[in-house]
Length: 284
Ligand code: NDP
Image 1 (spheres, rainbow, N blue to C red):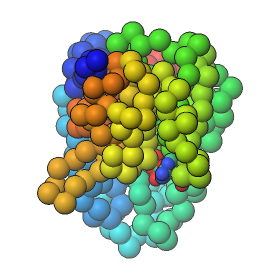
Image 2 (cartoon, rainbow, N blue to C red):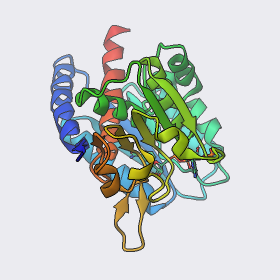
Image 3 (cartoon, rainbow, N blue to C red):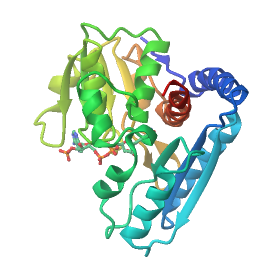
Image 4 (spheres, rainbow, N blue to C red):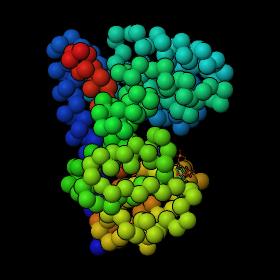
């Protein structure tokens, strides 16, 4: 079997075209969706991610502002900036690019963002709402994965999904979202003694670890959907995921490439959440 390639670029493009129409509709009501990004320090990967987010906003008419703070800035300077953005009516979405320098407490920073502007979906209020099935914003990466599964009509209800990784930003919300849709979900982590015992039974595997080739064709069931969230930079500068793509492709039914799979969808879901936040200002 040669798996169908799940093309995140293509799906993103289609979704962004629909989103641009929603932005136009908001403009007719004199609402210009606005996203503010706080970038602390000069981490090169963070700078690339922020640049891509800004470009994506521009492409569909969302106004974006990047607030750059030095890596030595105090925690209270970040909190003050967030308070200011919380009360700015032109800003619908706020995100703080992670990781933050060690002297700044991530939790304090994420919790000060108003939940209705928390377009990353990391605030406790939004996490709690997701757990109880009432989410207003889903975290972008798992949300993007769900959109990919749906776009390719990959069945979720009644299927066994295995999520590898249990981080707050990917693994845990991914597992919850699959559970919400009726999958039987296993969550594996670094302490799981034999990963392949789980992955060989899975109809859907989501790999979110950050380790090259940790999943290969011998570890998966024929016809399974393999979603590779991982991003790893090789010594030659190229990017690969967590999955050995070629061996997985000869066994799986569907597989996401890296780059070009989940990555573009993450940014697209950030746009979705920002537009949604702007639309919510009309409803409220
Ligand atoms: P974290 O480092 O926070 O989490 C990694 C998880 O992998 C941990 O839960 C860890 O388990 C688990 N793990 C580590 N080794 C193993 C192992 N041998 N077997 C099973 N599980 C293991 O990473 P993130 O969740 O933030 O990100 C994961 C990957 O996804 C990274 O490569 C990141 O760059 C990428 N990413 C990609 C995005 C995209 O848009 N495509 C967006 C966000 C992230 P334990 O908890 O036990 O330590």
